[in-house]
Image (tube, rainbow, N blue to C red; front, top):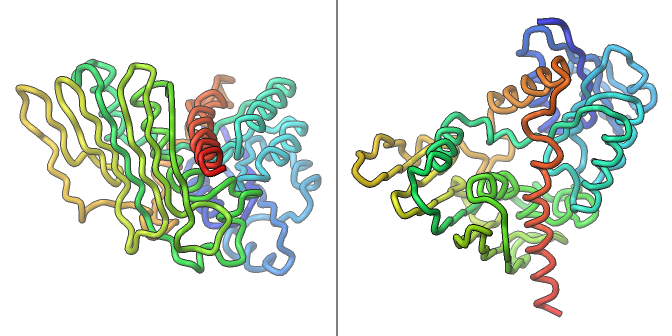
Length: 336
């Protein structure tokens, strides 16, 4: 594999996962990280073991960097992407691409103008068991899809939000739906298809934040199937995220990234994973491992080398944000 250089903007927990993945990939090299924190420069140097920049222009002048991983606050993604795109660097951005659809569409215009590649991190699409489920649905083995129930009933301590951008409307765009549940929502839409109508309610019952720590949504998809989504960050100790889908020929439960149950008419259930064996970030935001992020980064490397679109491109990043924005809007209008 020819060598390819990376840079990372942001130095939080998710940036460390990107760094670990890059270091695991043969032929990939991390050439720098960008931070706004002058106080943490020595600590950051020790953690990332690469050059630490505090000026984005200096960072972008590094000719060895061809892919920039954007891992800063969600509400800053758009402006950061614009700066990086104008420097003609390819981009891999953490979810969400931005906090609303209008900003994502602006990003799309900037990317097209600069003719660079942009991928968005929805790493759960690379989960082998999820891929298996999608193949089952696409093959029609569940028959006509009737209902989806999704739950992201997690827990985040008050300390998680204290003195943080998390849970703010400006930089997080909300809270439980847009930060924690977005990965599951992305999978639901990927499996069920386009959304036709949505209603929903959000509230803040426990945490001292601007965004929601609890919410529910009801959905009708364009294929006329129905769906429910419940989310929250106040369900101590936190429970693995779950997707249930029911069709005319079968059903399944996908929980914590594993197939817990798969029933197809006339066939035995071959999946017997136990709930207590699941890995999930239901109570620990960094308990997600590196394998799926590594798959995303490898896909981005392949895209740059072949000059082809990343698996999760701008178009695939839009539906989850569109749905979440509509849930927020419905709740606000209902409460007027």
